[in-house]
Amino acid sequence: MDALAVVMEGPERLTLSRLPIAPPTEDDAVVAMEWSGVSAGTERLLWRGRMPKFPGMGYPLVPGYESVGLVVEAGSRSGLRTGDRVFVPGAKCFGAVRGLFGGAASRVTAPGARLTVIEADVGEDAVMLALAATARHALADPKGRPPQLIVGHGALGRLLARISLALGDTPVVWETNPTRLDGAEGYEVLHPDADPRRAYDSIYDASGDAGLLDTLIARLAFGGEITLAGFYSEPVAFAFPPAFMREARLRVAAEWKPEDMAAVVALVADGRLSLSGLITHRASALDAGDAYRTAFDDPACLKMILDWRRCS
Image 1 (cartoon, rainbow, N blue to C red):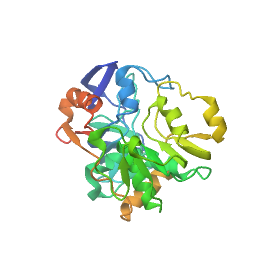
Image 2 (cartoon, one colour):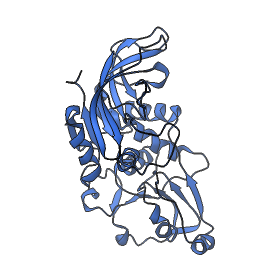
Image 3 (cartoon, rainbow, N blue to C red):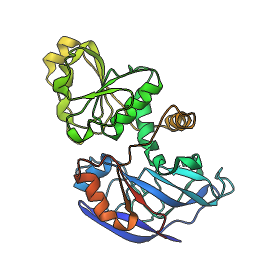
């Protein structure tokens, strides 16, 4: 059994290749992919060759951790049935080609325990579930504080704001890119220069910009907290005296857990969280090279997805 897959062979070197995939065990399911998302965070870093070293990192690799497809074969211990639509957070089924993250392929084999069954009518918007779960993970830490300010109105920032609203909070969102000022649903988006407030108790940074910390600390109240909700390839540093005077707190939110995915699936199912309006660009998987460049270089691209339905 094989699959057509996106392969990053090195920085800014991408091909569409046919790869053998591992045969399924009784714990696995085979998924025919419908859509996969392109991450403008970690996958952009892989593309640029700036991804910090992590276990499993290296080229060649199959990217993709935001994938949705249909189960076409289900092992007896997989907990799934043929025909289930599932969210696929990646797969490691490509042998010598690394599956980091492994979801950008026409077909994958993955353990059933890693797959999440979703409602059939969610459709392509379900590629946003990983980012929604990431946002929920940042918000759900019992030691954290609900955001009063969210920095960045990209896909992650919008999901942080939407989930905050679903949980009863109403944050303000900062954005400097004019093309991303629109699209708010129940919250205010403004340029930082237009915000007169100088004392936020809780700021969530979804920009991934390691150089913003001094600016954010200057807007903290005494004892205020900054949550780093994005991913940072550069060292994170800040001037100590302003942080000292405010007795600032710094918190890092890591990747989502299964309970975060279950929570956002429930929020979507009961209508409290919408995933719509976040996908701005679509392309056939056969045009993956151009699609990845658009996702990483076009500031108007909030989320690019690849359509695998005509690929076999």
